[in-house]
Amino acid sequence: MPHESPLGSVLLVRHGETAWSKSGQHTSITDLPLTPEGEEAARRLKPVLAKFDFRLVLCSPRLRATRTCELAGFADRMEVTDDLAEWFYGDYEGLTTPQIREKAPGWTVFSQPCPGGETAEQVGARLDRVIARIRQAGGTSVVFAHGHCLRVFAARWLELPPVEGKHFVLKTATLSELGYERETPVVHTWNAQVG
Image (cartoon, rainbow, N blue to C red):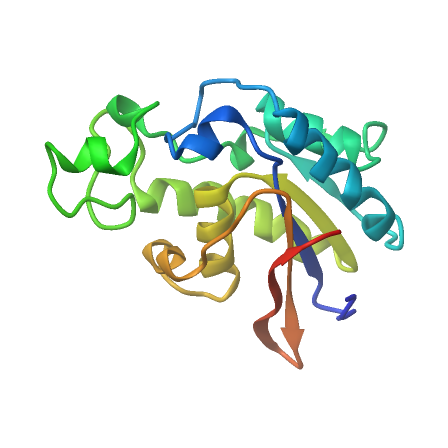
């Protein structure tokens, strides 16, 4: 890192660990703090991200993302946008995949609906707006957000349907870089752990 392109590039940062990310509970609107381990992992991002001159520093409005952004050194530059909020799971908020599969066998967020929640296409439309801003800004930007949201972001950056985010697993407090090889959108780095 970095891979500068006149077409733009972006670093994706999944927030640090929370109690629910640790337990596997689906977390969209529930505003959980980072665990002590999550805070420490977020602090480890700071020296790596300090090497960049970001055009945009964009962040989800959820506490776990804003706190990660702050601990990574960007409290003064953070621009919060609802478009980076995690996939809204509706009735499945707070449940684990095994719990959901008791009622919906074989369920994944990418393969079946979330009753009362968002569709993959709705999430993709939000992230398309963020991607358009990043590409218009040029240079390198950074995004602080969430696991499923960032997986859809990667799919849309690569001009794939939102459901193709199923192929991009992300752990907490990881860095990923999306950019271009000539005019083709690509993944340069994915799910890199720091420290």
